[in-house]
Length: 318
Ligand code: ZN
Image 1 (cartoon, rainbow, N blue to C red):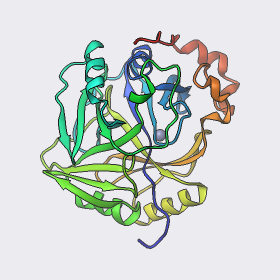
Image 2: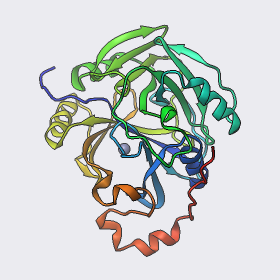
Image 3: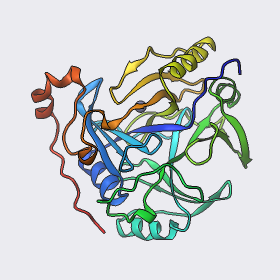
């Protein structure tokens, strides 16, 4: 690698959901994550953008959704993130299997991957998720008001899985430009790390016959990788551009700054800064309670609010 700049793990993953109330009931009510930001899609302000994370919105704990109720179902395939793995503390998988079963999650078949206990399942809109037991302690703030006791709460995003028609160009980008190291392989899956354990993994598989995936309800829209600050973001951006890929300019997402590009296999990647963070415009004790708009959308607040369906926080379901 010619430069010191690199990414440092997963910042957030963004997916496409169906009805926002069903999304909120599942992620906050069943999975017990905290709704840390209730905003709108900045490019489509008639649509919510809902952010779920640990209590503090720690980078790397965040899964976000655009609930686009009129979209067709997605098609799983190559060139997109096919599954989001979420970290849970070692010893809590059996507790989670019971909880998910009580909330009508079906077809849970425990697996072992890279020596880890994994429970794959789907959210109500068909998004592929997995819970993975981890031994290590992660930076994490427990959510006191969660229906899930702190000892079982989700610790953050653990890994993303991506199928590629041709692996080599994507692998080269990970290793030579973004600073990943290939650390393990198991069957057809290979694991890269962006310099850490849980939260820094990208699992890729070459699948030459796979159809290309198609965005729709239940698909991952993009995965964002952490960069420490603006300088590192610009350095990684320049390195991406030098390979012939076409990163966007830096876009101010208010809670962080973003650059987007498609990796060679077609998956949409983002580079997101760790700061300023979700407490920039809300009292940390009240994150997610009110609709928050970035300053440039504030003057359209009444029209935006009128277009959005009402949302009710789910009751705490034990
Ligand atoms: Zn994003």
